Length: 326
Image (cartoon, rainbow, N blue to C red):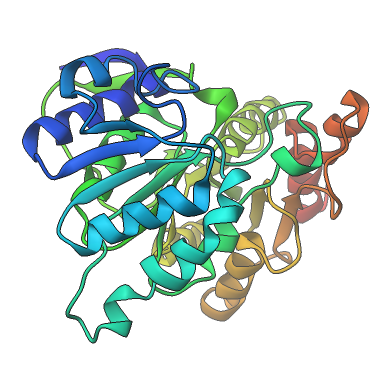
């Protein structure tokens, strides 16, 4: 059986279920307790689990990320919430130099089972320092797993899998989509890390994306359908490890690929996917791989610039017509 939940409620349910299941799991971060979370993702958790397991922190990301890493090395399973991944830049020393390297530095003697979670990417007119997309930054570092979600059912299943995983995981969400609704199973389930999902079957072109750009791809696919173009839409879900096989198999069928990625174009996820496809599916391509990225600049504040900066359905439609030589 399934019921309809918002993305925030699916995440909330995942954390509650895992905290009931395992007393070593706890949540810490800015405004997660008394305020019920900056985006209300942790609503009701302080009342159920108390202040020893749902912990408000100072606005000191490096400090509380370090506390989380130390707790994970000593056998606990922390969930560390950043109000936004833009603020987590301050904590990169702990995430990259400690969490990601603990297993290899200790020759396998210490694990670091920790989940760092919060929203990534733009959220409207929040300007340059609050609008960056961090999936490619974190995926560049060996030792970290990176998950980026948009579907409520996936959000719950992947967060539960992340909490149980023995590796450090960066879990990316979206400020703008916490209210997005979807069907979520009532029964216990886990979604496997490292497996993409085909959201729409198609035969003419493959669209690959993740996080809120999936909504852009779905709208573009609907517009393309009106013109007789059948798009296959793939949601990566996990950035590292990346599910190359699903993308390659789709391209072998459609012979064309457009990657939609909110991050900057240089050295990003879309560039990595383009490399993989030319390596493993070159003979199947009927057109060069095309990318739709945000502009190669910092995001301005003014609304017309925001709209021009970000990928949108019209840009995706144009890219598809380009690879189809229309």
